Length: 107
Image (cartoon, rainbow, N blue to C red; front, top):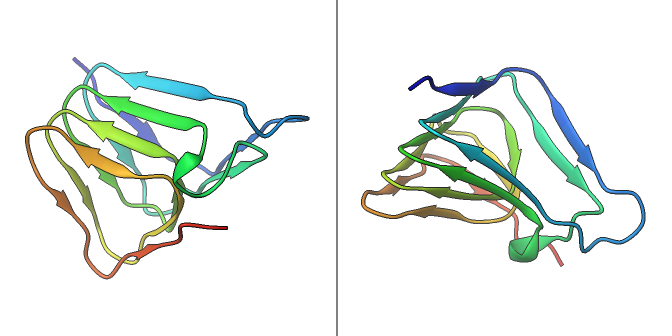
């Protein structure tokens, strides 16, 4: 299996209703680069954001800004100084490790 990476800014915008639901599935791991930003608009907010990242193994979130609910089978880590604008980080069998990160729940 091949790991998939997010290496450039991604802006996910839903026009109209903010009840959109988007799901991305990764058959191996998810790794974001230190320069990547994942930002959502009109896709809900706080922990109810309609953006889901399902990862079959582990996720490494390195970018300065990330959004969405990450559900990893094994573990989730960050390189520090990550801002999670909305969503949750959930690991099934391992740990969620955050180092000097910020979680913003929203209104």
